[in-house]
Amino acid sequence: MAGGYVEPRTDVPAAQDWSTGAGVAERRLAGRMLTVVAVALPLTVVFALVLPATPGNIAAETVLGLIGLFGTIGSSIVLVDRQRHRTRLLGQEWRRCDAVVLGEYQPVMRPRLLVHAHDETFVLRGFLSDQELEVVLDRGEVLLLGPDADGRGLLRVAGLCRIFAVRRIPGGGEAVAGVAREPGDPPAERELRTLRLFARIWVFQVAVGAVGAVVLLLGIWPVLSMLALVVGGALLVCGALSFPTTVRIGRSFAAAAAAAAAATTWTPLPITLLPRRRACEVAGLVRVGDRTVKIQFPEPCLEVMANIADTGIVWIRGVPTGAVAVGVPRLPLMTIGVLQGDRDAPPLKGSLRYLWPYEAGLSRIPALRR
Image (cartoon, rainbow, N blue to C red):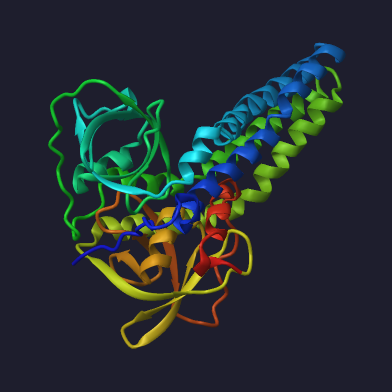
């Protein structure tokens, strides 16, 4: 059994490859959205200067300040994406190069890669994630842009759409011997843990509502505060409105995680992706035996959707019925799909709106466009 990877084109500039474009678009939209959220930070400073220091005002300003600080991440993303050398590198063609991981396998310590690119060998360092390193250890290759005269380059691995900045450095070291994944191997515990985490995402909405309730109460007593009433009320309403959706989707994640843990094989099914009708909704038609059923992806993962669009195959862990775990064999990522045996049954409503950045990437995939 061989799992199909989405393979970027190596005969066109990287910016014109659709899977690369999907990753870039996802990152840019996330940066823009967070930059808008960062407006809360200067507002906090203004409110702190002009409003009296009542308990309600202080609580509301603290909440707004934390939200604004989180949003400043978006500003750094936007600035990085606008760097000239990054745009110049994306105008080059991807190079497929042999690579091994050097030194101790610790992603947080900026791992080093020994890369063999045609007639030269060099060492690259960058903030690669666990997922990318696992694929490099398994496949022994990377896709590379650059490095340029200043030693800066961009890197990604087949099957995943994310792009990482790397820098050429001197040195070497001992290669790490990775444990290769077989196509039929079960998901790692970390991937199942991710599904279980999303199954309890409703706790986050409860926390948001609880913080809103506390700020709202402080806005009423001991001193009336309009700012606290607005901020607390907004958080409370957001938490209350999103709670039913998170509970419904959380149940689907819990069922998919349990089915994936109990399964012994991956089941590949031919799929035809349907045109998207709404944001945060991706669906398709799959063949299960002699039947054609609809599968809906309530929280689409960009990498999984890219692989499905490129290969025309959806890989399900376990029995294809109800809520199922969906992934790609030998890639350390998973999401869920909901199989609707009755074509007249209403679709799973709702979506976790904090995953909106994925929509930018999905809109760049031809098979998923409207």
